[in-house]
Length: 108
Image 1 (cartoon, rainbow, N blue to C red):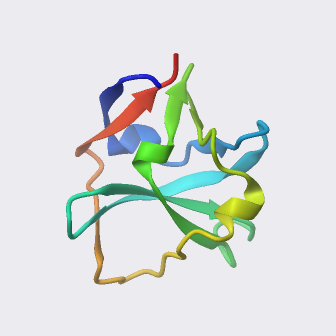
Image 2: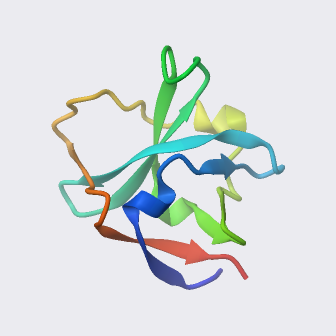
């Protein structure tokens, strides 16, 4: 497991996320902070130009950066579909600002 690195939320926005078998799971739409302070990525998949897209909440601790790409090494497409869904206005989360720093593990 690599070490965490502080990265601006704006650097994660719209990045593709790749799963356990190297398949594209979706892309990061938002970064959220829950009431306990835990950081999460909203991964969107499906739809067209953001319309009809399913959005899933994945803890940032499950993601890794490697060579500028984002990976979720323990997550498959079917597992992603079991993650909590994000709905705009969910009072359990606040949306991280673009300049805010979050921790993302660096893969070895």
